[in-house]
Amino acid sequence: MYHRRTIRLPEYDYSLPGAYFITICTHGQKSLFGEIVDGVMNLNQFGDIVDQVMNTLQIRYPNLEVSPYVIMPNHVHLILNVNDVGAIHELPLPNPITMVERRKMTLPIVVGYFKMNTAKSINLFRHTRGQPVWQRNFYEHIIRNEQDMQMISEYIIANPAARSTDLEIH
Image (tube, rainbow, N blue to C red; front, side, top):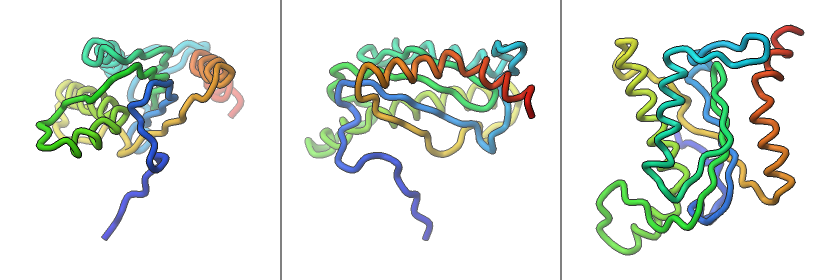
């Protein structure tokens, strides 16, 4: 039987207040969301869907802040700031132990909501019900200090221009 290996830190409560750098890649690294022209990411209709759902995250989860983020042709980078969230209730919670475990899942719940809603809308638009849009997992990095935050923020903001240069060289 196949078991997926977790990339999360064991015993870390991902609902703790803090900042997280997240990267979510498309299934098969397919360029779905637009193209980079002269160092600027130009979103297509699928990229616009991703942008719209991204902008709903702070409404759906008011104790979260998404900033900055960039949508690239085949992936998305974002910083997710988690304030004091408490438990996120997406499903009925039958007992207090489940509540504690569920509280530790803030990042997977938010990313899952994002991936599910973007995939559903994109597949509806392109008439491809049930087709995967995203890879199964996502990359996350706990931002540990202000220097880390500054470096990652600059990386996210500069990503389209950097990728444009990479494309021209190869």
